[in-house]
Picture 1 (cartoon, rainbow, N blue to C red):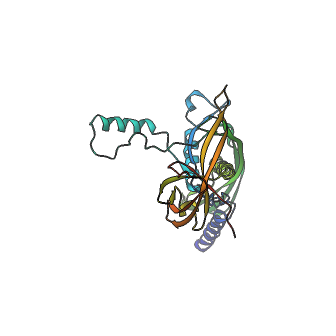
Picture 2: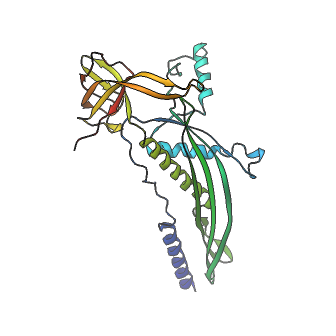
Picture 3: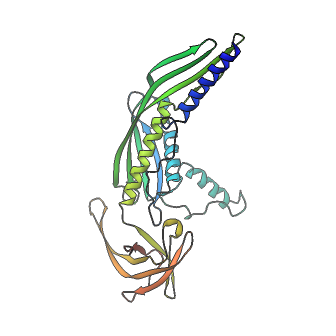
Length: 320
């Protein structure tokens, strides 16, 4: 009898392991986000709220975990530079404490040192359902039982990408996922006492949210990749231009950049929106040295005007 029980245990454990390690159950890092060369755009994630019948007053901050998860995935994707905004007021408090000499040292944030967010991601969870759909099956013989369950859930999130300089919508997109998952349980009774864990793999709603946020990161990355690549001049001295991107940003020795300056901005008189920026070409810099975060090279002027810090660098097409 003991031998039969051990065989049942081994078979059940083998089935649990096979199911848990199969592609349908294993979670892997999404590789769909393409690498974007050049200096990273800065992005802040704002409020993601709930709308609909399930958005009760007691759940006003339910979108907070989704915002936090999106921040984590954006940062891991390396498609942009994520800046924190939820703790801004706390940082201002630290700055005020340092200014009033309540705290000592030079580690407090200084005015003007915070990175500005070029884009803001906000949105709403417009539809969701819990794992209220499913089925189950129990397989057992004698003292050992294997239970298999099935359930599903889905989530829908509408997101908006906002240009913080103008308030204009850069892109809007909807991400939606319906994910199915399974409950795998193993119970063995020894001397009348039930032992063994009952583990639920891939919670449907959590898995659906993960998949939807991965789609959101892909959409954000595609939007950024479609924008003109523009770096900026860090320094100019004695015919050498330093750029604000290096090897980490995809800059290579031999890359050529047009150095440009905003000559005139045409704005809408009613709204103040920037309609067009007329750019002035100053010259070309050819990169000769690259470090992780900075690169520099020789400058060839097109007009008798030296570059200054903040002028734009536009990558020219690479030659094969």
